Image (tube, rainbow, N blue to C red; front, side, top):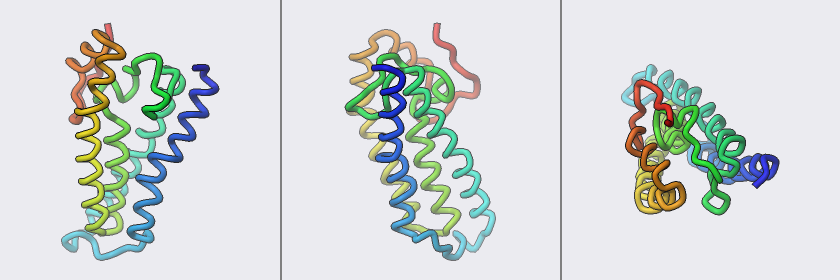
Length: 167
């Protein structure tokens, strides 16, 4: 796949997946109307804003790496030709999922909406099952020992404190 096609495919999938999951659905649930802060603590709103501010660039950076370095997309129908092990992937194997859930949970905290909090938790549970049952076996089959080395050295969900460098 050429870089141009990979970039276009990633951009299209970005609109379909993260923008819908972390943009449209939260808007549909909350109408972006503020409810009382969780437990009456306004600091939760600040934490929510931080999660959003940290999550959005994480999603954008990871999508760009899939297109420019991996020569593919995060979409299962147009996967990368190369295993992406740079950027946030040096710290954690699933930065897109983590960033999307961070944005959703951030919005839940910002708007004080329990429904959005539960949506974020359930979406993370779905991502976890997807990763364990579908994504990891596919990556192992596709990239073999390169993926095994990555999997052994980089945690699935809790980031490393220091970046991993592929051999």
